[in-house]
Image (tube, rainbow, N blue to C red; front, top):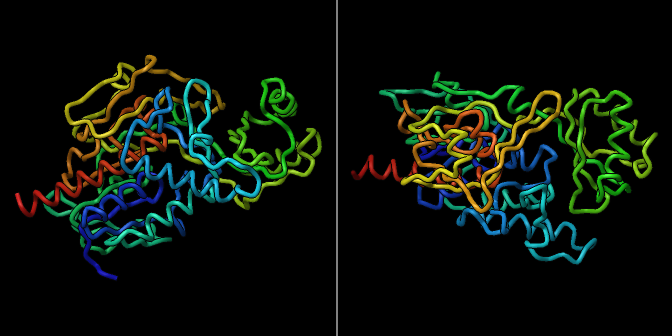
Length: 378
């Protein structure tokens, strides 16, 4: 493999996929590294089945470009995987209301397939799977090597600011009072309906009385599948499933296809950039002259006990994310996207959702490519 790349992208979740494809399409020799064996990140491996943050309250895309392209690819693959079970063939039929916001429902297999197709069909892009971050070298305040590759710029899409941590870059971080992790897992062969509050209570109340930590259920595109968000320990998941099988009608034959149950980090560390996006920026629908992405998702925070709080923007509004929040304050060739953007613990509770991660991933790649162009030609 070539040992010199214009741009290295660390992390192959939504932000990393967008960043890598966009950077390579700009003509930059790009390498994408991830600890997993394939692309997908939280969207493809955690059990999550809703893509949040794509739309305004009317169902219009907040961001065009790669965000819309990926949503289309995801819907196409989701329809393929369930074509024998339903007649739904349109992207719009996968968009559903969740509380006061709209989300795109999808399947994990479809997310991974859409990512693989986009990455595999993009020239100038190399991938390196099962590759932990192993070393970052800095010279004259710029990153010059990463995992032994000579690089011109780096985009940290790790979700936990791994690159910044490796070089001692200043970060903020969330904790269990703001973004407590949860275990997400799929259940198959579920015949219980969750279409009404009463039907949901028939499941949640017995679980609570049995002393299990809080959890929630979310219906899947296929009628016999649900996603479970669980605030307990990994070793308790099998006990939850056994309890459901024994005590709740419609769960007698349920099982999970997953062999491991790990907490999913909603958000971790955020790199301090040239501008710090704040919760006030979010709630006031802040606008910026260097805006590169839009978001209308509420500030969503989760406590360790599973309780959630939501602070919504005013109806019909959205906020913008400035380019300055995607570039490190101290290391000019370090860019960030997704959960690692320069944002305080309130703002990241909104900007961390995948629709916004796709948009900031694309934007960070454009910024990195422009940075390199100016370096060599300006």
